[in-house]
Image (cartoon, rainbow over all chains, first blue to last red; front, side, top):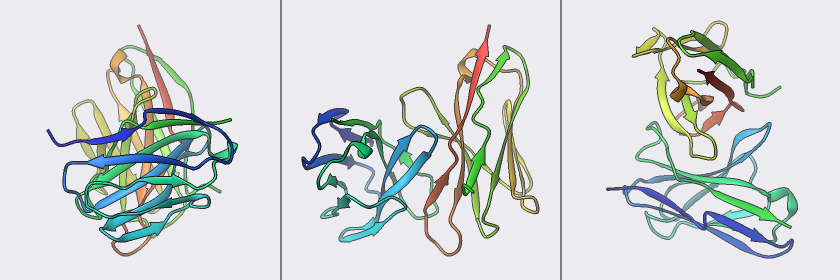
Length: 112
Length: 112
């Protein structure tokens, strides 16, 4: 069955380290999104991509980067992890811009 | 002011009760509206889209009032399995952006 996966599911890292969170979907969806979820804020968009080689900044992009070298993957990189980036990160994908977004299971990141 | 606002609750109701959640959005140009459901520590999943004419899916009824920029979700005959957080979601301001704006969610606890 087609699906969207994230790895790792849990990660503990130290301030200042570079961290990469993986997102992989097998639906062949053009659109992929990264969100973070924090208490009191709901889900906030970090970066998104509408296709290979396309990336765009979302609402809370500072300190994060993405690259889209193929349809299936949109890795999220924290260049220098900060404690404020402790959060739950969700990846999502959709087949077109108006279609339903399907979410991955999430990655719980703790920055000490 | 947040772009999408919800009463975070929690709403504690007995099985069989009817419960209603409300949501307001700030941008009058918003085009599409949804309710997502999120179980504890899991990913959000689409519950239903919200149409101007109102729509029903079993025990769930969603309504949209564009003039008041207000969205509602009514759950009838609540089940224990309805316990979750319900996210009000609004798409886009103009054009074909595909970006979703999430409310912080309303938590429902259905008690036996």
